[in-house]
Amino acid sequence: MSDYTRISITIPKDVKARLDFVSTKTGYSRSSMINKLLANSLQDIEKIVSYLPENPTPDDYIAFKAFSNRLLMERVNAVGADNNETKD
Image (spheres, rainbow, N blue to C red):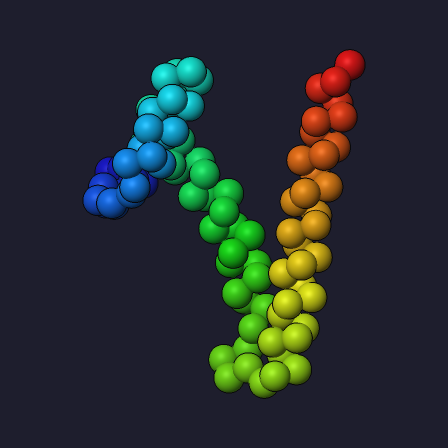
């Protein structure tokens, strides 16, 4: 039994064209590309959303914003570090 399930999505034509370009250049299928991109994005989104309580207060939203900004900066810094390693 497979750990995968089939879904249908609708995306803008320009996004499909960009996906096809990257897919062709890398040799990965569109499905594989979407799977990897979505899995990485969902991991961050889950971290952010799990920070909010069931019935958030205005203070919770302020803390949520700070947490999401911190997570975003961590991702940006990680990409920067990766780019610096490949410049040699």
